[in-house]
Length: 270
Ligand SMILES: NC(=O)c1ccc[n+]([C@@H]2O[C@H](COP(=O)([O-])OP(=O)(O)OC[C@H]3O[C@@H](n4cnc5c(N)ncnc54)[C@H](O)[C@@H]3O)[C@@H](O)[C@H]2O)c1
Image (cartoon, rainbow, N blue to C red; front, side):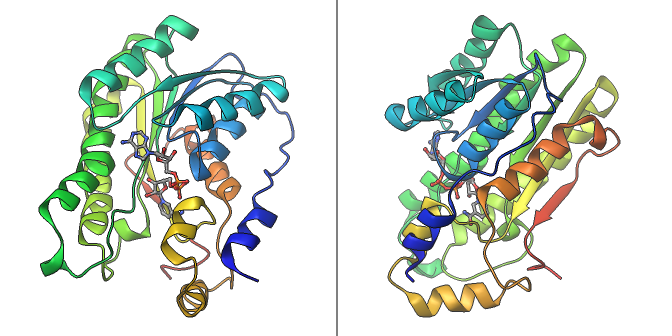
């Protein structure tokens, strides 16, 4: 079966038990219109949070909002390019004007970058695009989210890194550099605000079945098999599995966890 078909089959969102652990809280998810971000937005809503979905593509963003409303939850879409400071500032302002503040932020938006070429062939423009979205975008989000959380005296941020933030790999120098950078930025910010009620962590997924992976691997069954074999559990991960780890990092259960980078990787990094 081709990868796309497998993803279509497995992309049904996991049904959560409604525990309402985030009831009346406000959660922001960047890149919440697709893949991992959409699963995180749905998971927050299923646990009772009001969700602000931020992303560039409006139609898919409204789709996530519709899915949340069908579940009986509350959500609001804000069109945002995370690489642009004014838009990120407006995104955080929308959390306050729509729902009165911000409790949790998942800075998930990211791009794989194209084309996949060796370091010496990588173009400056392609480098800038990946770094601007994946690394500067995460910093800009934290820059505007943190003051809102400090105003409440508490908050949790989860930044989306990758196993590519912990080990090297070929044909994606900007992606690997950006995801390593996300871990560095997470640690620095976690230290700065540790005594002020903020916890800031990162998650590091291995290969997860999303549109990003379809774009990267579609049509190359040998590569799919090679990547799959690199995961000791013998399969790729699902967006809902990254959502589970992300929500845990935001939860009271992780009250003593900050500055941590959590692999969600089926054993990939063992
Ligand atoms: N799928 C994987 O195997 C995998 C593994 C490790 C880490 N990640 C990371 O997970 C995150 C989500 O990726 P995904 O796999 O769900 O892919 P995806 O392509 O489905 O989602 C990427 C999301 O980022 C958004 N985005 C991209 N550029 C943006 C910008 N400038 N402003 C606002 N939003 C922007 C897209 O609109 C989309 O919602 C990314 O940061 C990615 O690097 C993915």
